[in-house]
Length: 444
Image (cartoon, rainbow, N blue to C red; front, side, top):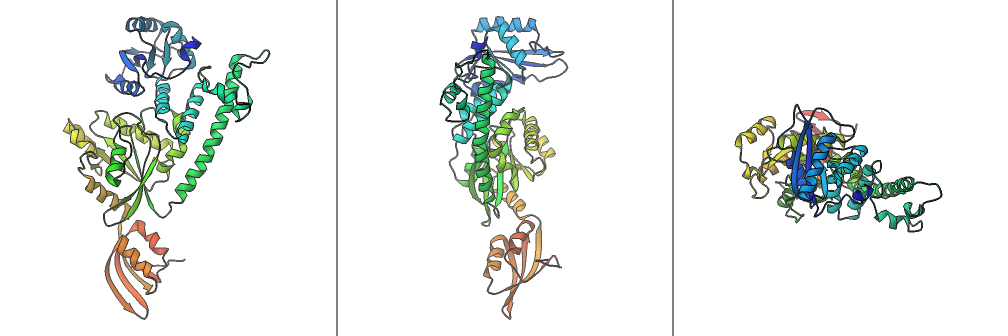
């Protein structure tokens, strides 16, 4: 069966989709998302097979009898690959392939394949390769023909020190050669990605003092469309899952002239393989270090609430589950069931409803973000040297000056300013300040 799994790719292959769900539960649309994933990977879905099970069979997951039925359907539909909406163990994959006699992939492997087809930059390609290797290492061998060339480089990389797969030493099994080769490649990839991580962190640190916003959400929720609409940029927009994998950061000027940085990130999905979350650490740093997350939700999707839960799960996994977040309900112009939208609005009363495609609600979103940017409004009474013009300029840019009086080389100002901008004002060094009628020692 080894020859069945020379690659994870499913492009142009005829696929049968399988969902094994508990007999006591499960949804009728279990295969809807898997269908979208398979088609995004380039497979042609020729049949779907949903099986309710009491317990998971340790050998074939669905039981040998059902596996044999599946094998008959493979022959009938002339399928090349069977894709499970479940995560399978190495043993289950091997036993299923013996019965079915075609390649068997699970949900995680399919998602990894999609990421591989979308990876364009060097960083994304390294991240995807690392995730693939870490996922498949305990499962199967001889799936990575490109490693032959890496290993045959004569020691050009850490992996190259091993030698080609065909250079098996006396008494050493092929499996051991493959595992050692993959281990060394994983070590090399981690070394390269660590350097990228360090550069990414330095880049993010260089943005201190700027309000950082990050778009997060389920894949295909419309994040790239929103980024384009808010910043007049030209980020790639496609109606497919995981259209882009790389972070893009743009300047976004809010109402009143306040400047922010807004970043787009990879889309999330239910049961996103943890290998991808780990390997895309540098990409997800934008979310971890953001001052505000805009959680984009496709409210036209009937599974919107489950998608919200999936996104929150991934956010918690990367360490920003408690980050300040504003829900943004996108695609309200094509919602078919108004009752479902109203239910979501009840659950998330602060959410902003928009259509990034038509521009509906974008001004409301701007105002909502500006309110988060400013924080609660403070009433200030401060004194500053007339020579320190930066204080007045700052207040005109980020707050509202109510009154100014001049005497003895000083200017006394009454102003309103957002809580979040107070630290920036303090750095400019006013002589004294009262906040909401209470004196504050600036330099204590």
